[in-house]
Amino acid sequence: MSMRSTHSTVTFSHAFFLPGYTDELPPGDYELIVHEELLQGLSFEAYRRTGTYLAVHGSGPMAG
Image (cartoon, rainbow, N blue to C red; front, side, top):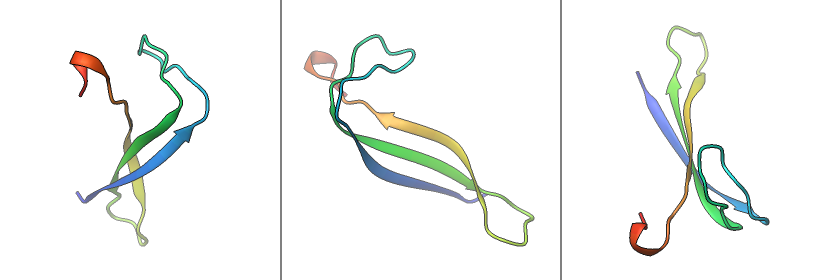
């Protein structure tokens, strides 16, 4: 099965929270990664999203 990934940058102008993440995240630029797989057996090319990830970079000794 063929996979593709798309990387883009999203900008948040205000601080925000994510479910399951305890700290408030500051405004700024974040990397957004989307993984998709090619659907087989169709007469046209179509992809199904299999994952969407927002890269949150830490600070201090636990960064990364």
